[in-house]
Image 1: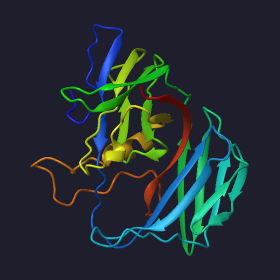
Image 2 (image 1 turned 90 degrees about the horizontal axis):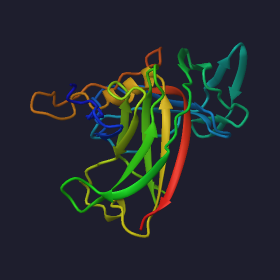
Image 3 (image 1 turned 30 degrees about the vertical axis):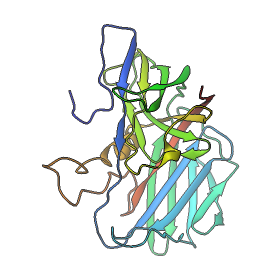
Image 4 (image 1 turned 135 degrees about the vertical axis):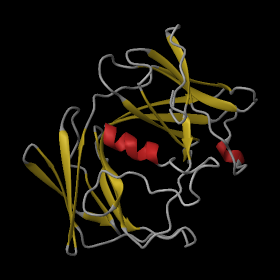
Length: 265
């Protein structure tokens, strides 16, 4: 049993419960590097690549976009250019991804070339969601119920919105212990900022985006937690594992997205 695994399961019941890993992002203090975040999804109008520069931990949180890059995404020999639509943001509405297809990102910036590849998995979406009190607390959390496809490795990333505001915690899981099962997964998180807007209350609108990534992108999200907690961990944890070659931080993903919303009673 992995201590940092997303799910802890009881295999004797069909409807399984799991605890989501809440990941706090901590990066090393290093010299500035390019940070690339790119995605192709199976939804229209969501193909986008952003380019910024990293900063040391004690620097401000302003990350100006990097202009002047040549950005393309290739699939089966067809190359789509992404024009710069905002400072450091390159996007197009002409590329909608297809499950099973591999997409190759290429960025030419100054004298450097960055590349990455990602294969879009088959989509899996929630069958239902509901809100209920968490374990040993009166605070409310969302539970997502879904059926994991049998016989293939699946990697999930859940994003939660409350009244349109994105929850900053990151919830990821795989199907190492749930292949082919029906999963009931509560998205627990610690409101360590005591921000009342993050707590789910009656009357709130809640949306869950259920995202399917490939293994490399799952490894990126999972590795964000390495060294972040625990007495034996480094005070300066490692940067997350990237699937981008050429010396940049970040990730490129070809992913499916399925969403579900509810009004909290």
